[in-house]
Image 1 (cartoon, rainbow, N blue to C red):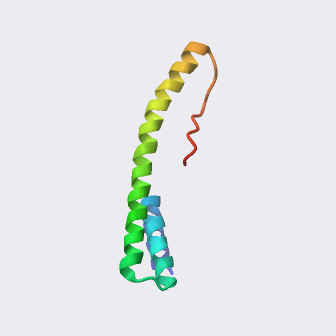
Image 2 (image 1 turned 90 degrees about the vertical axis):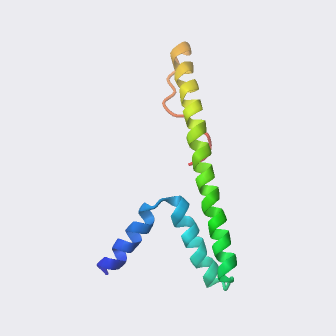
Length: 86
């Protein structure tokens, strides 16, 4: 039981870009997809998650600086930047 918990924690610690595609691969195989199709779909999903993560980090860097400048110049207190993802 301890080994299973260690494996599950290891997979979860890899992040959403690895865990969600792995989960979708398993679900695809349970739905009797061909392994190649399920693997390709999972790989594309992992690439999409990675791309979205890069994009969100880039946007947050730009928006964070703009939000700080807006706070400084207007005196507004804006503790969070909401971009609608994550």
